[in-house]
Image 1 (cartoon, helix red, strand yellow):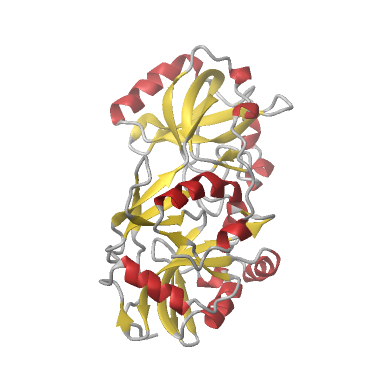
Image 2: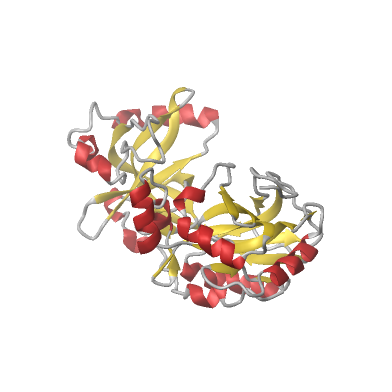
Length: 357
């Protein structure tokens, strides 16, 4: 491979803002694996956000990228899996598997798609210093004949349309909106774009915590919601506390601390079979490896309010943010019924707008 921009390349990133800023290019925020694709003739390399190779995990995409990308190019985009008209991140994570036979099977049963939204090089020309508006024109032309599973991401310079996308596209599993300055050059690993994500709040039960890597202070709180059968389900964690607050949380939760998991709603995680699902705290997975996931059980009697962006199935897709304790709420009142239901929107209608501005 001999391209003007060689792998590995870390993608340009975005910082969170509360509102859609004016006067920019707007795109949907995809919920998948960020990927930089290098193609030089028959050679295709798919690099992850960290620079590691994803190529072996998506053999069906390698063939599709050869068929749909220019002969020599470097393209930034997102690997996604579409299921029942929505993005499905759980099925996407299953694609990262060490066994070649499993990779082959999943490539056939849950094939991935690639959504392109930027171009870093075409032919012998590096485009890193080219303004975004010109790179977008080049990308639209380069993918003018592309067919699924390779897609051109929809984009617009109309802030009103971007707001409509923000409100409607979530029903297809998208994560919000990305805003990019029109004169922006491509700067790997720099947070020069802007992301506007959905945020909601929920009252959840605190059922345990993990220690911080630096010592005996809280690293994250383990959160639960009661399902329709009255079982407390593990829905995620909240973290990102100041160091002083982490120490305070240990003291606040000390009266509820249990000597062991016996009698706790999540005691089953100690059984080997429970670890296969990786749904309970303490379970290992191919994502966590040998990372210490031990946790401190507490009696599920305290309720806190957290902010979250969206759900992936029956759990928070990303780490939730602690807002406040809710002494006025009982744990039993913290159910899935309180969560906002997003109006469904078919992903085909999103991808159908890829030829826009």
